Length: 123
Image 1 (cartoon, helix red, strand yellow):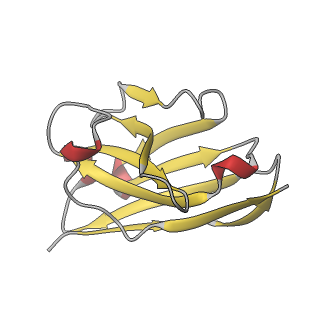
Image 2 (cartoon, rainbow, N blue to C red):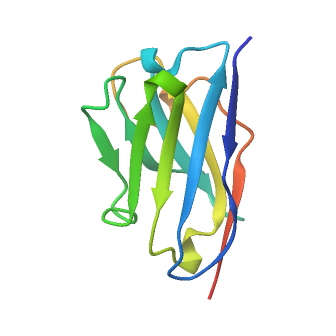
């Protein structure tokens, strides 16, 4: 059975930083692309960042480029999302998910999802 778990969310002031972690049990993350998504109240879930199996292909949403960094430590079976210069509009529940196919930003291609971690940025 596969479980994906996000951690590291919290409350931070605008301009601050947080690092989210995504861990999995029942699945070796190094065999999958991993993506981060977020969903704000009343909005659809949207793509944030993705990293390929080897880490060679990384993609970001335009809204987070230059502020967020996705990385992976396959030895720890963990993927990270370092978020700097946070803005109130980054407030959302952040989810990570695994993608068994070619690297993609298409949310429909991701199969296993965590429960999410809340990120709140105050102004």
